[in-house]
Structure formats: C-alpha cells, structure tokens
Length: 377
Ligand SMILES: [Zn+2]
Image: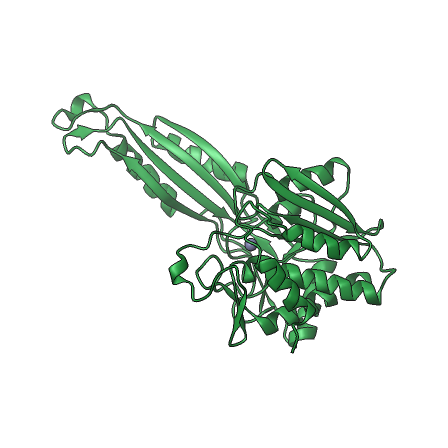
C-alpha cells in the first residue's frame, strides 16, 4: 500500500535535518505545493532565520495556518530506537524528530488546503500560511518579525490555527484556546559584605530578602477564570554567597517567573512586586523580561469552526485548555487575531523516540479541511 498524501509529505519533511534555526529545505517543499495551488509566496529572511508568508485570495476574512519547520536537537542518538531523520513506522506510530512537533501538522495543513481548494477553487476570504524556522530557538527573527511586517502594511490575520501539538491522548481531545503570559524578574538584593563574626558591621541581603520572598511566594495574585488557572509565582534560581562559611555576602540574586492569566496585567504584577519589596525596606535592582503576553479566544467564528470540525471527525467535542508553555500563537494574537492551537498528541515532544500516530495525521488533515469548510466554503 502506498503512503497517503499526508504521510508521504510528512516523511519528506521529517527526512530533512532542520535543527533550529535551520530549515533544510522544508519550506521549499511546502512552497512548491502551495504555488501549484495559486498561493502568492513571500520569503522573509531575517538574520539566520527563513520564514515564508503565502496567501491565496485578497478578501477578508484572512485565515492563517501557522507553524514551524525547525525541530529541537535529537539528544543522545544511542537512546533512539530509530534514526531520528529516517522516518520509520512501527505499530502504527511514525517515529522521527519533529513527527509531533510539528512537521506532521505541516503536512496535514498542506494536504487539507490542497483538498479544500480542489473542491472550492473560488472559496470565500483568503487562506494563508505563516511558517518560520525559529520557533524552537530564541524566537526573535521568526513569527514576531513576520507579524511586524504584516502589521506595517495593515495585513491583519483574522483567524489563525497554530499546528502545535495540543492533544493529550488522541488527536483533537484538547485544543488550546489561549496561553498564559510569562513574565520574568531578575532581582538583586544588596547588603553589605562582611565577616560573619561581625554582623553588626555588615548587612546580610539573604536574611533581608527572605521575608519578602516568602510574601511573594504566598501572595494570591488572582484566582484565574473559566479558562485560566490562577497566576503562579515561582523562583527557579537563587544565588548568593561566596562559598565560604565565614563571609556575609554583599548581594543575593533571585530570578522569579510569573505564568499569568488574563486576570492580571504586566503592569499590575510589577507594581505589586515593587510594593512588597518596598514594604520590606530592601535595597535592590530589578529587571523585567516580558516573555509573552496571555491571550484567549473564548468566542468567535474560529472557535466554533474548530470545535465543530473536531466533533465531525471524532464525534466528540474537544476540551478547551490554556495549559502548557508559550507558543508563537502569542505573537499572532497581538494583532487582535482569533488564535487556536490544534495539533497531534504532545506526549513525546522534545523527547527521544518522538512519534505521532499515523491515523491521527489523517484525522488531523480531515479536521483542518473541515475548519476551512466551516469558514470559507
Ligand atoms: Zn512546536
């Protein structure tokens, strides 16, 4: 039996060693297929990153499939049962680096669009692809730069499906209709270095920081809402001291990170942190990094179309969740777009022996096609 179009394209993409930020010809492969369907292609190279924007149609609404061709490194090859760049099917599972995250989804998107356009050559609205090769890396020259370019010329994405692996046990059991924001603080609390035997002429920044950190760690920032768990505060790193048992250190460095819901804003979180630090009379420096803003798509045509498409294929509606790390969806949502993540099971992503269920790829192709049917037929 020969491979289905989805499986054949997935294997072709997975054979290319596109370790982030390399693309290794994956985009060229997709571009050829989309050009044949009448898409206008724009290749956007920013520094070391290759991206492309492809669009078919000039009307609104503008619907976009977003994804990435890069993959994370393989890790120790001796722990792989197969060559990670020789896609191999064992017991109905397709093994390769990127099978689930997310070259499988890319193949499903292309084939879904091929089928849809064949049936509806004069479809409503516009279909586009926003594909990057730096999602797994520093995400500086990928989706965010393409979004900037589109916004500069007022080309606004109305609805977007990101093909990130959203599912838990089988494809479509979970779709992500939002993501939490991520905000990091790098705090240095300053004291006065000295001999531990002469604490009266030193000032221990660790002792001073502890009550404030305790308050930060136990503060309720918000209670979340229907879609988001409460905002969480965690200290992933803390460094202080010289290693000697007789020196009071001059400073202690604390890194903390918020994963925050749409009930909190960056400004409000920053303000409350500063209030707590001031209350404890600390002398400190504090730098902030906004890693991503939260987004939520809790209503609208896209959500309805996706839920119904999954229901049509699975005879079961998906669960809507906002759990997990950040994704490129956050950059697209900043345009005001409706954004939903729908992709395969994420159990093996970034691990050795990454795999995807071959049947799930066929179902995902059907789901993507059904979304197009629901929105643009
Ligand atoms: Zn991914």
